[in-house]
Length: 372
Image 1 (cartoon, rainbow, N blue to C red):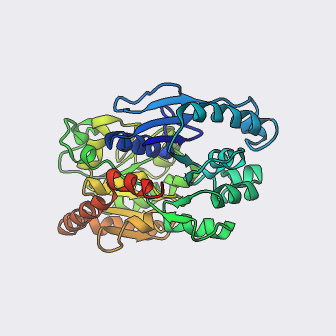
Image 2: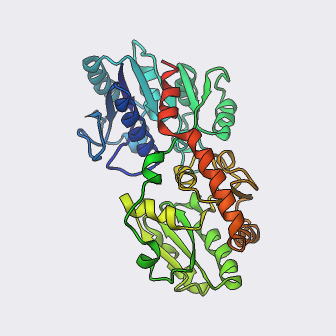
């Protein structure tokens, strides 16, 4: 089968959607399909494991400012995409982001069959979402309704689609996946040595770039309560642009107890998951966080907030604890319970690892093709 994957952004740009697209494309390539990733960023593969082709389409300058759906931006982009698709002649099209990617496909004539996955920014009502930025409710609803399948990656995503007016029968529930082999293989990385902390220090790990939705300020305040009760614990946050929280670390008296590691890649990222004791996500909003799946694959118990995706992945009292967002005391209490009970950490982690088996990218990618 020839599979075209259409997305507005792709590697080497780094984000959840970009890695989802890459992972799906890799799995489909492994299964013997010919895959072409059509995107706005790159015209050649940039990931060392890429077994797919890449093509770059064009849009006019000003589209991100004024709206991808407006004239003349939409028409110009549709023509550029259509030229690539006519040459490739795909049997299956997987679009990522109801807006703008699926909008371009829906508004093209003749219209092609496609499935579409929403990743968050297209359907969220937060200020950073496209719905508030461009006022595109009708365009988004049409793009999802005209698809062969509007893929909801979490239960909350389904509810948001239904509230938007998407036909419930069009919505297909398919979560994100995880590369089990990558996160379970042995790596040559010593997290505690890198941090300069003692070998018996327990490590709480968060992963993700700085963004208001991550709410690291609440996470740090919760950890300050933990640090007062336990001298042998260290908090690591891995991601970009996190130094903005340095003044809060100073204010809370956490100097030497918190590390901002920057972006960890390859074996370092895998090792950080494997050698941490607890995964911690204090986010106030997600759609289906890959980082929670990755921590599950390595057998880490988790403390997460009761938000989209996390509430689907983490079984409260079985693989971790689910706490209401911005509840500093509740988050600290959950972290301390796991820190003080090694047997519970091990039991939760083993259950999380077994649960992660259901989210292998091989299984998830085949569920997409069931819609072909």
